[in-house]
Amino acid sequence: MEKIKTQRLPWDQYFMLQAVLLSLRSTCPRATVGAAIVRDQRVIAGGYNGSVSGDDHCIDVGCYLVDGHCLRTIHAEMNAILQCAKFGVATTGAEIYVTHFPCLQCTKMLIQAGIKTIHYLKDYRDDDYALKLIKKSGVTLDQVKLNPDYFNQFNLKDLFNLNLE
Image (tube, rainbow, N blue to C red; front, side, top):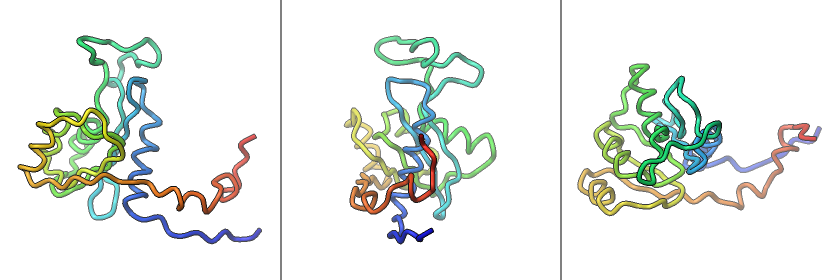
């Protein structure tokens, strides 16, 4: 078998793709969001939009909507932070990679948790007050652009000899 030579994936693309992969586990169809918390170039936690453990999932019984918000869903960023809390992993100085710009509540939580950089893939109802808090707190905001040229250099099916038929 001929070895396929590829360029190495840059760190920001690598971690953002992990957030994208996590978003595929989302159980709320209103927004499939994933988040990966990273410290020292290592993922320390991940999360996605989903219900509280043991509760019904939106994809099974529908969203529980009040005033246009799904009350059943815990946001991806919160699930990642809670995973750190559950397992005693410090978040001070860490970075987060999230598929969507964080809502106001998640922004406040990330700032309080000591996250130093918020990397996001796409804008999503960007809140003016969240932007003000990010700037005031000194948190770095970085919109990651996935490079399609990188992905055009190989075919995942062939690269991993996947049988997808």
